[in-house]
Image 1 (cartoon, helix red, strand yellow):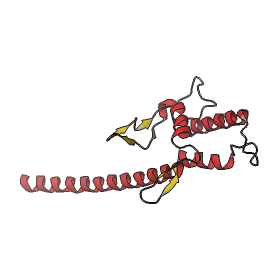
Image 2 (cartoon, rainbow, N blue to C red):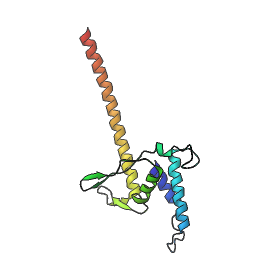
Image 3 (cartoon, rainbow, N blue to C red):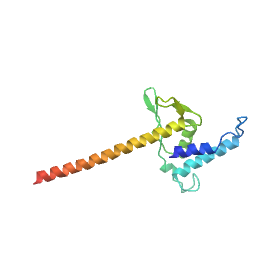
Image 4 (cartoon, rainbow, N blue to C red):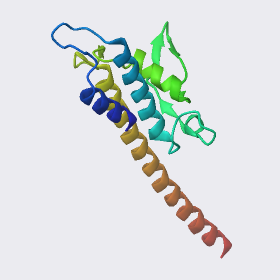
Amino acid sequence: ELAEKVKKFRATTPLLSNVFTGTLDVAKVQQRRDKLSKLIHDHYCVCPNYGCPVCQADSRIRFRIIMREQEGSLVGPEFLKSVQHVLEYFESELTEGKEVQSFGHGLTLALDHYIIITKRTLRSRTTTLEAQAREAQELKLRIETLSHATST
């Protein structure tokens, strides 16, 4: 959900100050970064600004990242837990224009790849949890049936 908000933000907030020359205005880049930071904060907290006395953004954040394999083992934490870390992840791993290999589909934009993987993971986990809940209910019924049968 946050990644989709960031994608929409990037689409509606262009980075280049002059599309014909391709120049960047440093002040606009910082303004855009501040707006992105606020967007991330506002996704997790309702206080007026990050770092205020009642801010709970960092304590609420559990942003799942895609683990990268390096030399046969997974690298990095599975979850990021602060606005600053999430912002840095979007700026480094999910940066605009960055492409990644997408499971036999060629190259795809990193942010789009992240959204696809996250939705697929959520769908898979939801299906698994539903199956486990059904199995638990069936086992409970079996136990009650066996308990009743052995007590009579």
